[in-house]
Image (cartoon, each protein chain N blue to C red):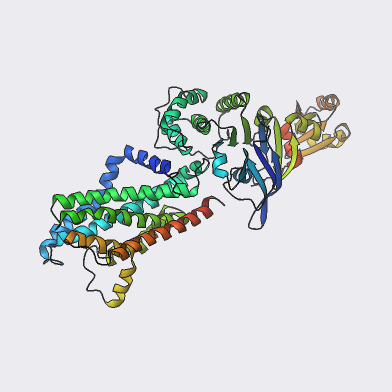
Length: 303
Length: 253
């Protein structure tokens, strides 16, 4: 099967600065793909290039068998987009939002009306068809935006930070919805700043920094390939003295503020040492995607 | 190729408008109507006939053009800006198979439609009060309203494209719309203008609209009708072309 989206050597500069710099991405049909990277890494620009909204300086974009930007309009017929910023029509009800959006795809009112009950059901908004947008919570709006992206029954769904600003309950509901889409065979491409989200949802992750792909693989592969399996986070009184004598036990130690991150294959010895240091508190956990992300993109702030 | 891809955008605006049609119509029409009736009867009582007709009849054509201009301008400035900048409606549409040209054409034709509606409302008053010479000629005011609306919708969209916020529109109204109202012949004939002022006035889009509307109300075919119509069309198309380029720079770069 052909790749739903293939980006090759994609390059885009603004004011002499390369925001996307020779980026490659090949989506696999029916899988969930994550695009991770610090603020300003080029994620949103990449998505806009992939949709044919802006033109690349160099490189090629092929979206659902169409070469962009020439055939962007045809290609977007089969794509659903969940943008980062809320763009629902506040003057319309829930159902009117779906009706209006479906028309942009050239769907008839009848076709859209037939799809609306299932879409509302999917979004957990059954019974809310006639509710004005202003009465919806943030989570409901997000779910409606997701339902809106499905109105054209897309093959590929692109989501730009789909759960930013939501409470844990609302995030879990969105995740359930996205899992259902994956099980229906849809291809997903999402950006997120939540590593747990990427770890839970994504089959394949690309880490982007300074417009370049710096790592790629499944969450497990990335963790196994880039980082020691165990992390012990240490904080409290006497950290500096303890740090000096423990360095031999860890493969790598990183201090961020008042916390020391010890990366190790052998956590028992470190924990035993810590039990003997009464002023210190610690958290022992398996390494996760966030550790990988911080290791390869650094701990510096990017805004 | 003629494409109607813009139609869903027009339709979206229409459906929102339909929900708020009552207050929107009232707001659009009360102002020009009060101007026309207040000035027409009040000031008109003090004046002799203007261009051979009572002042109210003279004012009717100016009011029609002024009302159509305002309607198109408000729609493409404040309302379109809300959709583009505040509600991100345009961004949402651009993620679908529609492109920026479709969005802007939908806005252009929507603003034109709304201004035609303003023109029709003023025309109804003109008919009810019998402020015309030949009824058949007043029907030509409908295409004149469409052309005038198109012209100011195109110009408005180009201003919208470069506006950082709502306050910016005040410049346009102060520096473009108000001078046009004062120099274009809405309230008085411009025949007494000194040559240099008349030369400036002759270039203004609103002047062309009034040069078309006034004779039609006074019972004559306008002189240089095609020229005035072409000027309105040209201003509108130039405005739209600028709007397309500038909005692309703003949203799609």
